[in-house]
Amino acid sequence: MVKGKWEICITVMLCVVASALTVATSTASEDQFSKGCVSENISDILSSSREKAKLLCDYAEAITQEAKSKHPSGAMPSSAWKYAAQGISVKHYPTGLMVTAEELAENRAKIEEANRLMKASGINTTYPVSWDWRSKSMVTPVKDQSGCGACVAFAALAAEESAWLINNSSLNYDLSEWYLFQKGGGYCSSGSQFERILDAAMFTGTVTEECCPYLGSALCTSPLYKISSWKKIYTIAEAKEYISRKGPLISGMAVYEDFYWVDSDEIYSLQWGGFMGHHAICIVGYDDSTGCWIVKNSWSKSWGEEGYCRIGYGQCGIGSDFPFYAVEIVPGSDPAPLPKKFSAKVVSRPTGAYDFGITAPEDKWVLRTDKYGTAAEMGVYSGYQRFGYKLRIPEGLTYYSDQSKNPDGLKHANVIDLSGGRSWISWKGITSKYSSDVVIEVTGR
Image (cartoon, rainbow, N blue to C red; front, side):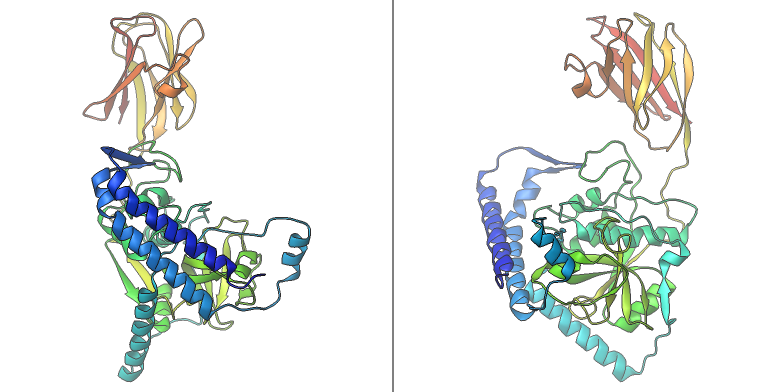
């Protein structure tokens, strides 16, 4: 392995991206920029492009310094050699925590100062020898950030979802990392920062996963889940006390190549490989008897021990290069709506006998529009559910509210949201060129 080769490549690529961002400020001219579930004004994006460019160059410098200071040369494990000999691609997972060398230096100074002050003040913290929120069923399923550097959003929502669970265990929380990542100014190619993501979680909030699926587009409206505040914890003793009393924490870590190969619950400590980047994680517990943190990662359940791992104290910069971040919610502030019973009714005189149905959140036929006033139950769904609709004509062709699915590629459904939980779906241009073929009213109560 060529020492430092990977780090040099990362530095060069980040500086290229930074240069491209600077050029973008003088060449972009569109009025709107749409990205996944969130739309932003191009002026808002361009106003921060030079800032992002500088941040990327600072990030590149931080990576270079980290690589120079910590570059172990231990032997690769037999499993890594085996795969390499067979020509199988070396394991790689995305990271995405952006932090500059100056920020790391500031973190270290504040952590050292906080520990000195705690020792001098004689403050005692109390917490059990071990704690694991998994054993109390207060964690949500492990997710996969795929090839995008969205680890900060995943770590933040892993902690936030647990906070909601701890305060209301009767509900299943699955919040949208993609929505939060975009609101926090993240980019898949470069990642995001703790402060921006946490501020977005507090001031903007995020929707549910079903309304904004990861790497997808918005499918429905949803109430915004917001944290009430967030804070940094600079001492390990206070971090353990917080975990055992309130819930999981967020932190950062330096990732080296051997961390990709974690495939069991064995306590991880750095053995070999080059520095690969900084990564955000959620800490769901600790164990003083074995000297480790219990970590929830965002690299899917196929990594580690069902997506979790144990990292030894003093490893990867947890609690030394990076503080801990706590998110707070107001108990009883859960914005989740009560389920509603939805029904459909024909509210115009149809030009033909059509079959009306939905395509999302499930695919089914609801009623036949053979006469005015025909009605049928659709089912019970979330109060903020947005539906996909379809209409089948006697000739057998089916048309959709999603224009891209229509056989002629034209728009035939106009969805109008009304008051009182009602929506009208007006179908036009199928058999009648000058008026509605049929209008369906969907109501949730």
